[in-house]
Length: 120
Image (cartoon, rainbow, N blue to C red; front, side, top):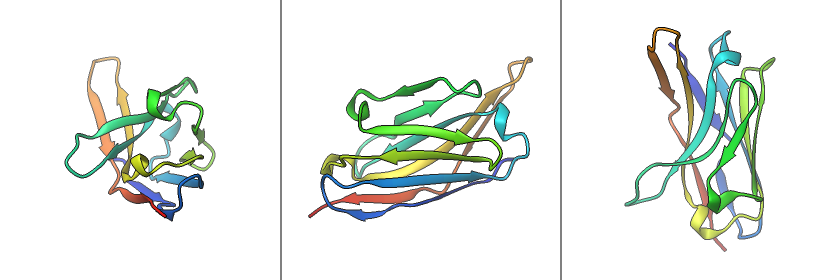
């Protein structure tokens, strides 16, 4: 079992920045692929950014050039740096940890979410 705890959300004006953090309980954090998802009211949860155990990253088109995902395996933590925030970035942001074993067993965990509100 992996427990994920997000922090860093809040209210920010358009054009501002926030950094989200997700601390994982697992001592084997480094073998998990990590991701940040978001869900706005009335919308489906969507992938914002992902980083593999090998540090490959991918981003949703809507956040490319503005958001950066990174991980610190020594601290069991993944980050999402969000710059040039827009009102449409308003959502609950969720941290995800995922790995598939050699026998194709999926381990998939979610944090409780942190609210990000972009408004003037």
